[in-house]
Length: 289
Image 1 (spheres, rainbow, N blue to C red):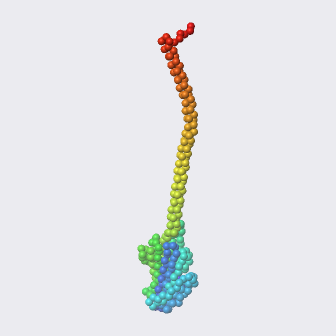
Image 2 (image 1 turned 90 degrees about the horizontal axis):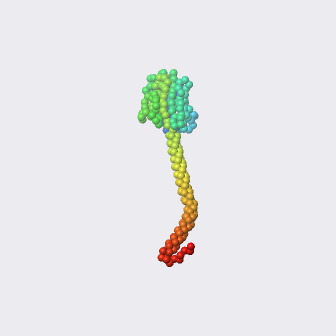
Image 3 (image 1 turned 60 degrees about the horizontal axis):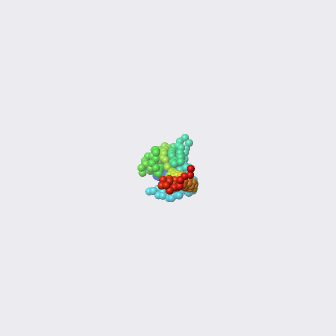
C-alpha cells in the first residue's frame, strides 16, 4: 500500500487538480492486540490508485473487512484489520523496518510488562515535487491510540491525555520528504500480574495453613507429653500405695508387739506392787530362807 501511494500517486497529482484523503488509524489494546483501520478516498481520477491499495491490503490479509466510503466529492474504501499481537502488526508494510532507515516495531519483553518502540518511516518520492500546488487538496494522517501514556513520541499532535497521537503525512505526499513516526510505550501484563498475585496469596494461604497445622500438631504433642507425665506420676503413686500399705502393716505388727510388751510390763509391774503391799500388811507369806 505504501509503495503504491508513493510511486504511482504523484505523477497523477501533477496532471490533475483533484484531491486525495488518507488516514491510517491503529489502536493498541491492553491485551497486546491491535486494530488497524485504513481509509483511502479520492476523486475519480485517482480511483485506480485507491483500488490498487485495497487489492494489495486484502491480498496480504484475506480477513480484512472492506467497506466503501464517500467523503464530499471523493469515494474510496475503509479497510479494517485485526492483529492478535503487535508482532503480527509489524508484518504489515506500513510498520516494517527498512534497513538503515528505521527499525519498525521492536519489543523488549519481561515477565510483567513489554516495552514497545515504534520507529516507522513513510517514504516520499522524487516524483512528488510538482504536487505542491495541490497541497490544500491532499490530506494524509497517521493516528495511533494507546492504552497508556507513551514514554516518548514525536507526534505532531496529542490528545486524550497523550494517549492519542497524530502525525500529518500530507507534507510527505506534497514535498516528497520522508516522515518518521516514533513512539515508545510500555504495556503491563495484567493477566500475569493478577495470576502472580493470586498465586502468591494461595502460597501464603498454604504456608499459613501448614504453619497453623504444624503449630497445632506441636501443641497436641506437648499436651500428650504432659498428659503422659501425669499418667506416669499417677502410676508411680499407684505403685507406691501397696508399698505404703505393706509399710503400714509392718508398722502395725511392730506397734502391736510394743503394745503387748507394754501391757505385759504394766501387768507385771502391777503384780509386783501387789506382793509388796501384802508384805507390808503382814498378810503375805514369809519368804523362805
